Image 1: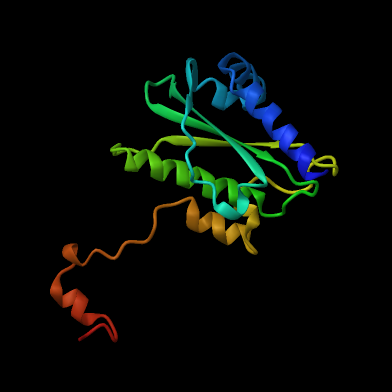
Image 2: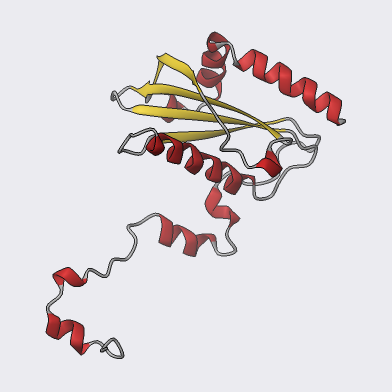
Length: 176
């Protein structure tokens, strides 16, 4: 695909999904049922995607960020990324995670104190069909099972404020 046709596709995608009614239809069709039932599509609005896409990736993708309330009344975001490469990207799930975290960071920088749910959605139009790589970010690790065991639970905590001094002193090589 030429750079010109990518720009045309990008412009068409942005024009279509810039229409909230079209975006609502698109998301209602393509989001998984368990996510759809948590989204209040009546509150769907364009959110400023800003510049959280890294400069080296801006020419490869088009970002659309929508805000909406969840059916529980909490703010949520749906982030859509258009993949403009003719070849699939093995680590695309990780890239989408990076974008989701960046959107969460912007939400916090705007004065919010709770993390919103960000639903990454990949719109792929490459020549390889079907898309050959996993969209589960944990599959990007060399050891997905170990990664899942680390990232699906609370991080380890060493809270010395809750430990008696004699216990701390009994630890090997931690004595200063």
